[in-house]
Amino acid sequence: MVVLGLWGLARDSAMGNDEVATRWAALLSLRDLAHLLNNQDAVHGFYYLLMHGWVAVGSSPAVLRIPSVAAMTVAVALVAVLTGRLTGSGWAGLFAGLVMALTPMISFYAQTARSYAMVLACVVAATLVLVRALDAEAAGAGGQRVTRWWLGYGALVVVAGYLNEMSLLVLAAHAVTVVVARYGMAVVRRWAVTAAVSVVVVVPLVLISVREDNAVGWIPRPGLGALRVLFHDYFGSATLIALLLLACAVIAILPGGGGPAGPDPAVGSGSAAGSGSAAGPAAGAWWRGGVSLPSVAAPLLVAPALVLIVESLVARPFYVDRYVLYGAAGAAMLAGAGLWRAGSAAGQGSCGCRAWPSACARWSCSWARSTGSAPRPAACSTSAARRRTWARTHARGTGSCSSATCSARRGWATRRTTPRPRTSAWRSRRSRPGRSVAPTSLSRLCIRSCWITSGSG
Image (cartoon, rainbow, N blue to C red):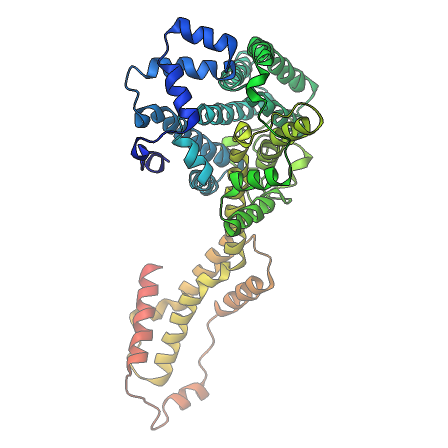
């Protein structure tokens, strides 16, 4: 994300209208800035205040965009960490981070001097802290430790709310996560109190922005075109790639797409999510309780945008796609987990393929000895022992595979562990005149593959 954010950051010193407003407001004195926020654009007041201090470094377009690049880099890293924690797989986290970093709208707002990258970073951080708080609650941690997690969660929600009050819509997604976790009414009450206090702290900004609603009078009611734009914002501008990532997201939501990250709510105790013991492609249905990737990412993808769109259809329209840009984090998490799950399923379906190089080498040893094309290699003298060792190791490594192909191959390997007796008829055939064949390049290649396989095993 750092490379994508810094690549072409100056844009030939060109700036958009919103960025021009950012630079103008950041260069005002504190008194003039307070007057501006009391009459217009209070929703961006906290961001303007932060940028007022940043312009001491410089006010060029590239310098003004550096905070957004840093914030988006943090957001991508947090998405990778959160996905890896919920799935128990570093690969899933890597895929989610790559999907998010390569999404065009994420790269665009990483190079835009506005608050949306910071909002995204705060929302993802608040989601991660929420998961940690729920894990601590389920693990029966001490009251002080749980309280620290809830206080951190509330602080991040407040910061995100002052950066843009529309970020408070993430509480709708978090409510779904907490309810689906089924950790008890006490946990729901603690989350509700934390969320309510955070909203109350942001109320002054909301009251001021209500008086300035003429600043958003240009916003139209959303239609099908707005939904199409939002879809491409979340999954990519190229339609084919967006559809493929959507399919991966659906795979992640299917039963077993992401096991609970925390202890089983029915048990109420156990290890935290970092172990990944309950996560993985074969985990149970996520709606049965616990904190899982679908129960965290799917509400984050759907709930904020849905609430804002419905509000804009029945009341004063406030929907703009960038106001719910943080939903892209949920899309990246689901797409990354779906890619990991699809890859894991493909690997399990072909788990017996690793046996074929060794099997071919063992067959080549037998063929070379039977044709008399070369002396028996020393590596082949212990082929029966190697077959028994390979069969035991392969059976352990593929015990979870129940496909007919893998079962047949495991049965074949077990049958081959018993050496066949060499009868007198075999010896008579071997000693028949004209039976010997001159060494060929194929036989030498097969013998060489046998030696390589035996040396590596």
